[in-house]
Image 1 (cartoon, helix red, strand yellow):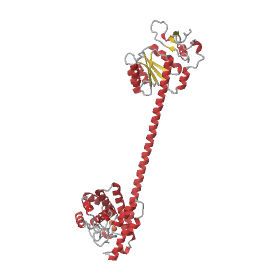
Image 2 (image 1 turned 90 degrees about the horizontal axis):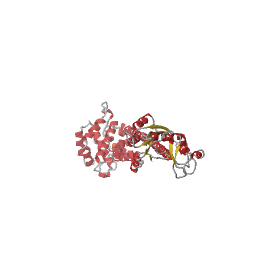
Image 3 (image 1 turned 60 degrees about the vertical axis):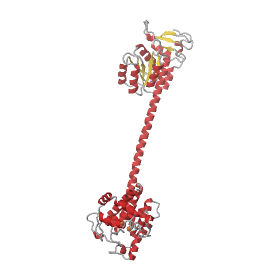
Image 4 (image 1 turned 120 degrees about the horizontal axis):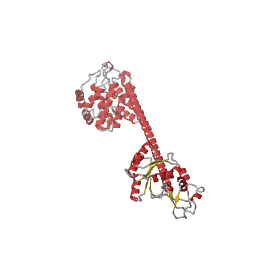
Length: 454
Ligand SMILES: [Fe+2]
Ligand SMILES: [Fe+2]
């Protein structure tokens, strides 16, 4: 049967294979199925409305012209080519199947939404071609279900309703296309190919996003682990540094009457007072860490002076006072904030608020805050712990003695703040109590005035 001249329609009665071959005819984008549902005796699938572009016999042209299917196949990369066709009209279902199968698509047919749902449960489909108006559940509801439950399945609506509203609703819902019956074979093939291409890109994009997210997630975890490791290392380094400082300080003080617990208590008293005074946490921590070195200069004090029983002569006391400047010279000159503060404390912890202290006799706020703080902490601990020249005084008595020196030996404001913190002082005192076995035999007085720390 010959096709009609260009722009004219004719009906060809073709076998499905012939129809398939014809629709591949590149220059005859001509194939149009029409719903001949009336009284034809032959299966209506064999009736096609054809509109060739050229005055060609479609049958004669079939062998010489590249097919659309080749292009389609080349462009389609998706491995899954399973397509579910859902339409209550069997002829349309079968026609669509005949259109698609020759192009490498694996087609499954379903006559209603319920059957389609079952098919979807039984196997994965790359695409669903779905009619809109069907008995029972509508195509729109089915599509909504598919797009929700099978997000990687592309959907194209095929309907006899040429409604922009419906088309927009379908597209808004996530459908990839909307084909109106009667449709051209090429229209279907191109829509399917484009939808599958878009689906492929979307899946690839999603996978790329997931990969990126996974990379970000993995690197975030690695970064967190690195930060945790750094924090642990920093903490270990800080603890190690503090312990080294404390042990050096203990080594210096061990020649004298002090104990490791004295170092702990007085440094925590210093931190407590600095915190209550309102210094920053970092500064408080620095003072706590640096204050154990306040008597490091005793390393330079000769044994015959440092270990002498009883009171010192004025000359001996002058030698003793040099531990402040020796400590300062040992610690000063560093770029380290810790050593700078430690040097300042070592130099000034025996200065008195009224200017009668040593080594320089500075007074009031000329005495660095760290020195004034340490003076209070060091003396309170000396008073409240046992020494060879004195018993341990209770807190009230120690407070009474120190308040007598308010504004003389000690900064009055700092002293008030300190004694406003008795609960915390008691907690520190208990936490770092001297061991019970510690006798007073190792302790001795090295002060001019009993009860005053040196
Ligand atoms: Fe001390
Ligand atoms: Fe001292």
